[in-house]
Each structure stands twice: as structure tokens, then as C-alpha cells.
Amino acid sequence: MKTETSDLGRSERPKTLRARSLGLKIDGSTGQWNSITDVEGVSVGYTTLISGNGALEVGSGPVRTGVTAILPRPTDQLCDPVMAGIFSLNGNGELTGSHYIEEAGKLSLPIAITNTHSCGLARDAVIKWAAARFPDVYAEGFALPVAAETYDGFLNDINGFHVADAHVISAIEHATTGQIQEGSVGGGTGMKCFGFKAGSGTSSRLVQFDGCTYTVGTFVQANFGGRTDLTVLGYPLGKEMKEPAMVRNTHDPDLSSIIVVVATDAPMLPHQLKRLARRATLGVGKTGGIARHGSGDIFLAFSTANKVPDFRASERLLRLEMVPDEHLDRFFEAVVQSTEEAILNSMIANSDMTGRDDNFVPAIPHGELLRVGS
Image (tube, rainbow, N blue to C red):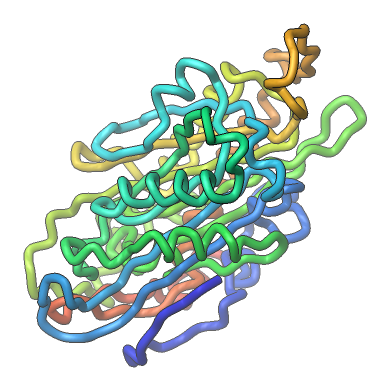
């Protein structure tokens, strides 16, 4: 992970503090790291950009943004596609490569997530990285990578275009497996959720099927919902929490969104992965999200199974495995549970943040969450 920061006077909390360690009783059995990286071969990298304070000066800051890279396979295998499906709950947002996923049911290369006005640059930077890293593949071939966005203009100088190619490439090259950071890191740096500081969050579930243990891992960039919408484990907590309040020194356009990326090592075909992506809707809904008109709620699911090396090499039939449609319910449940928990983690692993024009977003009070969990 690469981070460029300045001292903002934030009250830092332990990076490992999450919903479960706080004592919230959440259903489901998790993988080792309770992360999307529990799916073997999947890695996550961040570049976090934090600098400047005070009044907005477009092009100079303050800067509260970054980029997240999710690698579906180990770096040397990124040209081998993974089967994929997408679902748009509300389409006021962007996920590049979506037409190709709908057409062919697959994707390749790193997935980038950043702020709204840097989405195109992130897409192009992934292609530049791929062309340099795999010159033989892309000398004649084309790339349609996935890049997604949510809006961070309340805290960040979004029209300053501070995310550069080097930041995207650094996030890709520093991607790691195992435990990853959450909260105000990567593309989630300047995001807010239910009137509290949010951003990047992740969770996983283990699923038993046909004598095997499979993993479903979810990653969110959470930036949605009004304060009164917040629901925690079925309790309408947001209706009781007027404090701590946000400080709005400039107009808050409430351009909310959430990007959800679901990974699994279970063998699934594109139509099944689209169904998995659709179930992220229920996880968002359990936290109180209602997919407002201005929200870009776009969900992606992919499977690392059915790997076909040298898939361009010859004309031949491919033999693929799949979980029968009639037995997908346990995987649907895993998506719902891990999406809900990832959103909560994105808030709990966070700190207060002051951004442009001294706009302020508080961290969610842990004491209030403990009251719900008790």
C-alpha cells in the first residue's frame, strides 16, 4: 500500500478494529482474514492521497482521495479471464467494461475503484500497466478493464484530478493477500456513509457444498445513505443519532453510491455470478440503503474457478464445472451476510475526517454500536 498523508489531527483508531472485534454478533462463518483476500489468488492494493487543509483551491487541494486495485488472479495470470456478472441496482454511476461483461460474461486484469472524476484515468492507467506488463498479449489484442467510482467531492478537491497513472499502477503493484486495511484508504479515502466516515470495507464467508469448502469474499467502497436510514443488525440506530453531526460549510449534493465486488472460488457460470451480484442488494438494504435516485449502486461478482490456461491457443471444447442453480441459496446468503458486514467494517475501522472548506464527517461512535450488540 502506498500512502501520501499529512497530519490532519484525526483521532486514529486501531486499523484492525472491525464489527466482530467490537462485539457485534453477525451471522456466518468467515475465512481466515474475513476478507475478499480469503479467496485464493485475490489481492488488494491501495494508494491513499491525503494532503492540505482549509479552503478549496481547485488543483491544489485539500486532497482526500485515492485508488483501490483488486486483482482477481496472481499477477502473472491476470490475462486469464475470470467469469463474471454484474447488476446495477441504481445506475447513477460508472463501471467500465460492463458491456463486455454482459456480452461475454468474463473480465481480466485488475479492477480499479476511485473517485468519480478519476474513473476514466484509472481505466486507462490499468491498460497502460497491462500493455507494459504483457506486451505480447496486448501488441495486437485489446483490453476492456473494469474501473468503478463513487463521489468524494464533499471532502476532496475532486476537480483537481489528483489521482495520476502512477497512483493506479502503485496500487496494482503493491496489492497483497492476507489481512488488508479498511476505512479511509484507497478509493474509499474521501467517502461517507449514513452521515459517518466510511470508505473501504471487506468480509468473507465459508460455504460448504459437495464435500468442499468454498469462499465468498466481498469488498465495498461505501458512500451512500442518509443518517436516519442507518440500520445495524436490524436496529434503526440512525434515527436516534443526531450527534455527532457532520459540518457542512459547503453544499452537500448527497451524491451517494456503493460499489460491491464479490469474489468466489466456487465454480459458477456468468448467469450465476450475475445472480450473486444481485444479492448484494439485500446486504445493502440490511444496513438501511434504499438506492436513492442520485446513487450509483453497482455490483460485480467473479469466480476464480474454471481457469483455462492459454485459452487463446487452440480451437477446442472447454469443459467447465458449475454449482447447480438449485443449490445457490447458501452462496446467496453468504453474499448478503458479507456485504452487510463489509459496509459496517468500512465505518467501524474509521476516524473523523476534515476535508475541503473544513467540511467534517465524524466517525461512528463505537459506544452506540456496543449498545446494539449487547
